[in-house]
Length: 254
Image (tube, rainbow, N blue to C red; front, side, top):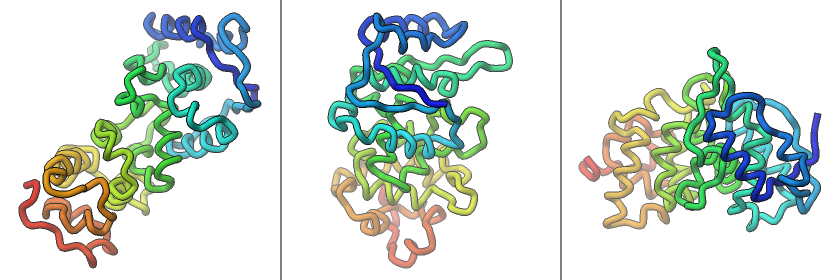
């Protein structure tokens, strides 16, 4: 079943914020999206389906399609739109646990922060942006290493490590290289250990890129060139096709 999407106004946004701050107990207040006192019609007609998704990558693909007719420049930074979408899918973003309660995370997961540096933490906007900007290469950021009954609620440690640096998240070559390093095409999930703190992990990649930025424009380098300057600790993560072209640096970042 689908419903015509409406957007929370300031009053509706504040009511949603209060619901989250109270621990999100009771029914999700979707009436805020129907009430003309707390919401308004969307500038273009959008039909939102109440369906489930296998992972956040699939969610991002869906969002790209249903939101394609909207003004993309406005959409990218509109707190009311993204917060409204979070309210629409709140049961999937913040599901009820076995104890009958929801595990509510920080507000910026559901209500888009005023600080653009936290945009990547929004559970609806980030899949949309990453799929829009990086396509298939965003899979390692949006698909969890392990199965979850509620995949849309999982922000993910890899995204937290990569997303905290806006210039990295906005670099097609870095994201393409990282997806090649950490995504396992056979399992359809990130490689085991990619989200940890071991040598060559995504956490280490973020640290190494900071060091490389002192002497290279890492975010602007082609994917293959980036492989050439990564230290040896990344060798075990390197895909076979990349190993043939890579001359992994001996000591950089170690």
